[in-house]
Figure 1 (spheres, rainbow, N blue to C red):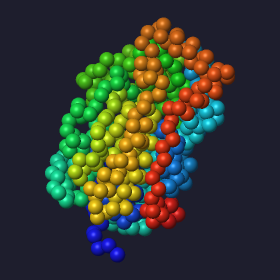
Figure 2 (cartoon, rainbow, N blue to C red):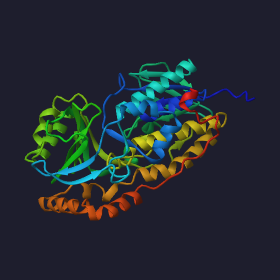
Figure 3 (cartoon, rainbow, N blue to C red):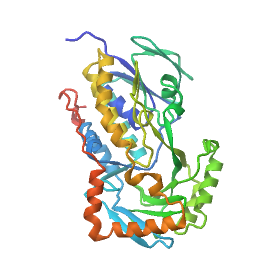
Length: 418
């Protein structure tokens, strides 16, 4: 029997990656402290999909009982013109859940709630192993050979065996341990925004309706509650650093982009000012050669982000949290070796997760009226019945099947065992 004391892991960020990692650690008897700069869990967020390896991870982690009742009922994606007339459809059934819409769709906040429930259950079975501290953040890190000293904005300084940065694309942990964001971030030529609004009466239930005009693609996506929907906007505009943190300027940009766009553009603009969950950020890709630096490791968007254009950020975060938790559990007395194994494990998933379908923002958002008309014509043809087999092959080719490592049964905990 090993006498090596279990490590104490500090996790920065209580989003999907941070909560999933804390869950895996607690289930394996490893102490975790989670700090989150927000004052409370963040609800809402756009729908994310679970397919392939991410769905397998959710099943291995025993999360499906918490996910199933929170799933978004989404039939597929429809493309509409300025009057709301549908000129193309991509149903989930036609693509066997491997197209733009997966069989399992869930709002990011609802997935976080399912993870929190599982973590609460695990904590009852193993009290004292996890502390989740909201309204605090790491402000300094000092690495030593066998530990990391951390200072916080509010709590007293403390030392940990390992620090995990699961704090998103603008990760403060990455800045402290790896260097400034500019070293790793590549702007992709635009911005993304989304927020919740009342569902318009004429919206087809279950369909993610999308319209594209010069400079912006905008859509309305179903929520778990049929009374509300998510406005999803992708803007192709020049980079403006002054937009960061300035909600008034962000809303003004959205209003200008949607002016005269038809369909529900005016509905979206009217609801935007009242939205309590308004999100706006630049589309960037994050690239690191290695997510590990000594005893600091990055997870999720902090380590590798292809932007919301990929639709793979949450899936990659969940996969990474599972893999990192299992590697730490397998070698708690040799964390450098565990981190090296994790770095190798996650590499193919991060690369696949950064691939943007169909050529990126330039193809997704037309620049001119002529380009928009051509995009509509192409979409109409490619989604017609004769072309469906070609489209299915294109989606299959863009979704590589990556195998998860197999861990010892004692480390792969089923929900019923926790």
